[in-house]
Image (cartoon, rainbow, N blue to C red; front, side):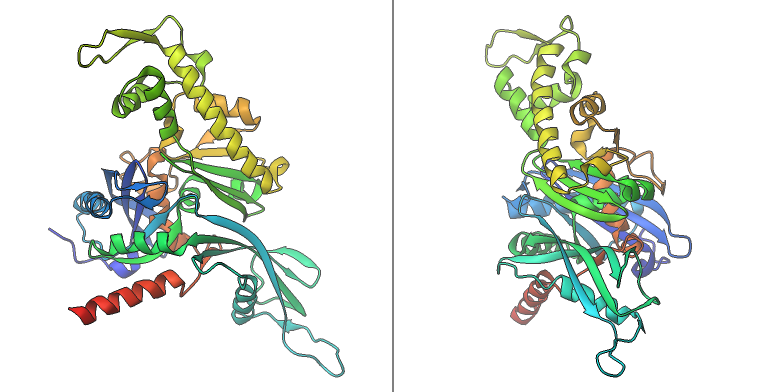
Length: 423
């Protein structure tokens, strides 16, 4: 039976995390008075219709998205009307930019007067900051204020109500390939729900996995997916750098499949059961039997040999991550080091390997500050979906401002209009 006594517009938020290995849907109930978040339902489905953020089989992807959504709705005992969609892929780009405006007018001959800063001033300076030249096939997904500067005062988080002559905004823009976002949103719309936001997946994961102290003192959140790795660098409460690598945990599975000459599914099982990110933590004396098919000779491999393949690839991924972190120009200031989340972070002994490789503190990021069915969704693989479901409510607190009418939204509206006229 579907509950009807809840105000879905106000309280129910849904996130749909579309990955290359799994699709995860989370339904949350938010109390606007206390900002407490309760997990009502979680659904998961294997993903075969999308790779590296690009749709490979549209109908297949829609069926898989539907499966995850139906599972979450059944658990929550509620019908979802709208959801927030996560997007990733190596087409995502992050840019730091800034804009400045004069506040108010002048008094007398060229003598500027101090005026109180209003919401309108903040909106104007953000519009100016994001007025950059983009290729026709790209769109701004997020405008994320890092800090404001009033005259000579910097590091201001909320300038409204303060007075000054000149207001400057330093922001981080995240841009996306318009077609990638539009196609993903249209697949979700096929489920009979409204997509009320498209959010960068790495950003969503950081919402549920990080705490405020980490963002203030410096941290990099790394969401290791199957075919992509999302990187988000925070410092002084602001987002300093974002990047997506076109490599993930599936590359480890592929290495095992090639080196041991087994199928991809078997390689994935072997990785989860016997693989260790640190070869030194697995014993050369412990052997396991490889599956034999079609008259193959039975073979044995030691856990140590397997873990050598795993470690080599994981070190490469961590080095690529650190190369991106160095571009944020805050490497020495990351007090809290690295937080690993996503399915790839479940690899055994990964924290030990990461600490040795990057020489910084490392922890596994699980969804935090969530009540309800948390025992079901305490794994880092759910961080993205839970972060997406929290987006609309934590967005303001995190100073995350989305573009109100993006090209993606316009395109979706046009598509709906055409469909309505056609039928």
